Image (cartoon, rainbow, N blue to C red; front, side):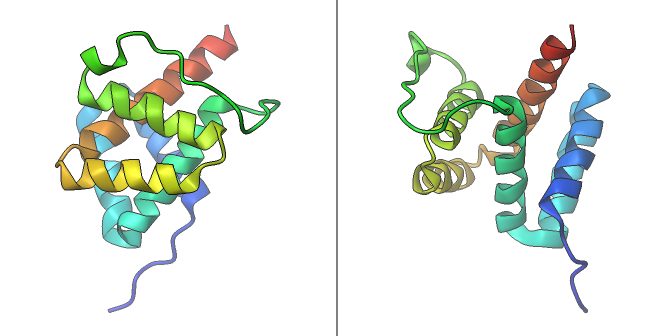
Length: 129
């Protein structure tokens, strides 16, 4: 049995389409399909695509400070998204991978990915207005 070829950009588009429908279950199912087809590394690549989409063009990488007062008081998935996007903006893939691995080990990765997708959609909607 061979795995279907995976394209993180196409997968990110599928995830965003699911997120636009505001159907958390469908969104989680889309991520499961990505993992089934491309493995956890495929889900990581999709997460990076989502972070890039959220950040948008024109943001200079590196040197950014995460300014999120009381970040330790918010839910795990919200903390994770803030830190993952911060790692992306700061061109720190080793931190991004560490955060991804920690969420996976903590059993929180599905919720984190759903929140990342939802945050990306919310950002895109805000930009559109």
